[in-house]
View (cartoon, rainbow, N blue to C red):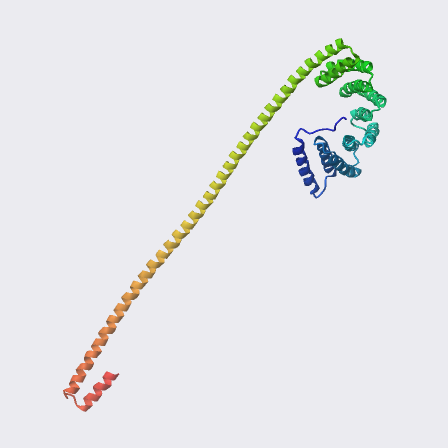
Length: 360
């Protein structure tokens, strides 16, 4: 079965990412129905990679429901393709055939943008009939798909259909016809330099000739098969090495990015700390200046108060000195008068006159 478009992320990681995007899209004030629909299609495709075909159909049905509002034929084809695979992998071949038929109908419209979909739909219908063991019908659809692929110059469709036709004849037990179609497919695979398909076709041919008892050709194609397989292994190793190198470079880039982020974060912290320290220093200067001028003002006030107090004390001393002098003078006079009275040196008239003066 021709698979839907895949993602370069690991299936589980890609599924998690799609779920996050879907959750984000669903919470937007103005919901992006096209974006949500596409996310469900991706989840459906990822479920195929995870071999969770029930989830494949669940997500595809959700996307189908939304696409009734979006009304996009391209999206409809992706949904139907995922549904068809989900049904086929669960053994529901009639449902899968119905999905591929709908894809063909959409792809047959003039407005269809993807010209390869028509050929792929026919090829997938042939694959369904192959699974149903209706090999003649399968071959008929493969040939229709082959013709469509030739018309639109679709190399993948041309080569895959040649291979499928050869395999269908093999399953049917017509090894001669299988060999004939297989040789054509082999030449095309070598012309297009598609090594993995070349290996598959060579394996089919060596088995065909072995079943026919043609051990000479069986040996010839067996040698060719292992030679091509060795090349494929080298290519696989090269791909694996390149993938490891790419992952290594990616990890290095991530580490450099992380280091750069840490440096930037440190610089940001240092800058923020410098700003905080500068603000603290500035505020400290303001507080110090305020305290200095405040203390200076208080000292000036204290000096003024001391001067005033000194003046006040001086005035008090002078006042008490005068009062004391006056009191001493009055006291002495009074004593003298009392002595005169006591010594009876004054007559009554003089005593009365002097006492009146003293009292006043």
